[in-house]
Length: 122
Image (cartoon, rainbow, N blue to C red; front, side, top):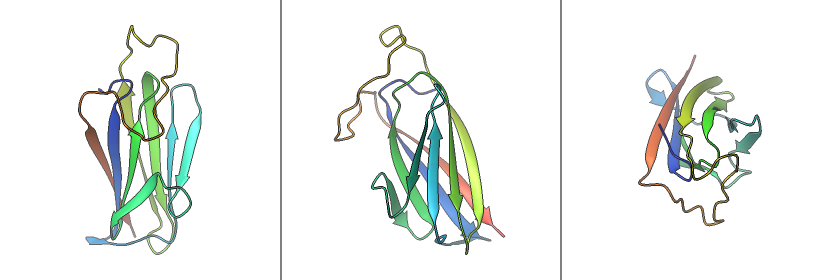
């Protein structure tokens, strides 16, 4: 369970078999509890970075309580996708409001967390 204001590292590893491979295009989409979707594409959005061959990262700060779903997708030579779900706890301090975060991306949560989705292509 995560908290509002917490910054997490969300990562995906794209591979063919056991070999990490860079897809032709990598996208990330986060759906927040209110239904809004934030899309990122590697090479266009600085929020989505590459840490090594086949490994991509988004640092996300939770601004709403409730269920969050995110999806990674890649195109040839690693046509694959993966989805994950995480829950953000409700807080009496942030009822009914979306938290503003600093442009620098620093969070107000306690510690960070990490989640990884392994996406294996054909």
